[in-house]
View 1 (cartoon, rainbow, N blue to C red):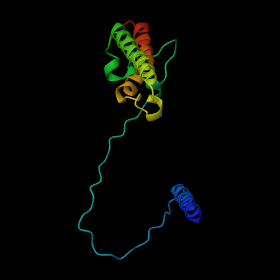
View 2: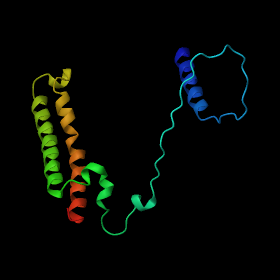
View 3: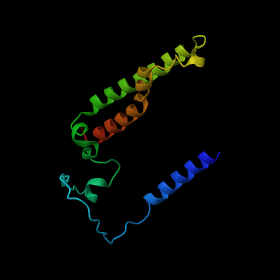
View 4: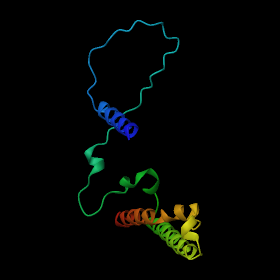
Length: 140
């Protein structure tokens, strides 16, 4: 119990020190010269203006869908949405069939990675459906 308490205290102190303000004073430490100095890369800063992030009216412009989906027609996005929804439904059905096998719930043999992956088709289908609606409203 003492080891667990010590571990929890160490985790709490580490988490609290992550939010401590950094000191502005620099301390000099005399040490041997460093042979390797990591190169600092400058990342380009992109600004998102409010004109791109908001819109007026019932639906947003196609640019909110990104560079790829903004160029796709509404019908194609609708078909992709149906395919994603069908894959989710298929995975739910097949998982329920595998759960009926005797002992499958005890050892977890009914959980298959491909059915779990296809289960993400539900949220993906919803997103594609919304993208299709946006494209249809924008006349694509």
